[in-house]
Image (cartoon, rainbow over all chains, first blue to last red; front, top):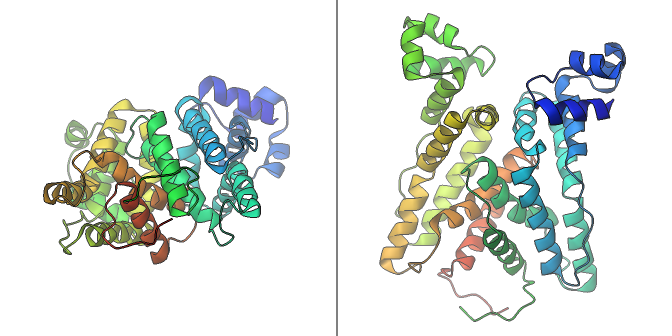
Length: 182
Length: 182
């Protein structure tokens, strides 16, 4: 079912994507599909979340390496994977559908789960203070990438990702390398 | 023309918005409308750009105050103005229409023009090094706000805006207040 949805999206993009078309392709009755996914957008969201390879929790040995690996992976996927051009239509639909908005927020939390794991580990090891606001730190890393991809429409260079990561680490008092004093 | 489009959007949102409806409301022939705005999305984009009050260049006396004022204004508008729930549909359409993507990037540049002015002024006065990458700095401020509004769907508190601004300023070596050494 989701495989059929996934294939359709990969081949044709959003254009030909509908519950009707997915039903035809998968041979599953429309009513059955609607029982699991109340709308086209919900099915789209679920199919997309499978298109985005969920990041594994890295273990490079230090927090900067871990966060940089995750952020670089996100930047790469945003610029190459089909889901990245489908995501705005989900965000758009979520603006007018509270249920879909909640679903989208949950999916976003799943996408950023590896960030959370890495940050929690750094808190346990003392590399980050316990009081660090995890969601704020994630927003500080993800935000500038998201902004470049969908708002200013600029290329996301590796040097930019590094600046963003170092920026967030410095704010949360955890830059592990010696830096010149301001 | 744009006034009619603006009113329709303000009243009914995206639902009832079409070139047809705008033509009916304004009394302007459809062909005339199409001559100026090749698509519904282009007209939508233009109408939205007028809904977002363009920020004036602040003059609080220091860079931090200026950037904070701009960022707070953006955060406030994102959470209260109608255009903020219309923007994703423009971004979505821009993914499949290069011309609209270029238009959207230009509109985004206009929205962030006041940031640019403030950063340029700080470079002239020596408050920021000449070499600062202006678009990177803007991405660092706008990104986390955008991420919270449309991706993680969290409230943007004033304290978060302050953290984001201080974060960016620190990275670009321009925090004007004394800070404890790390």
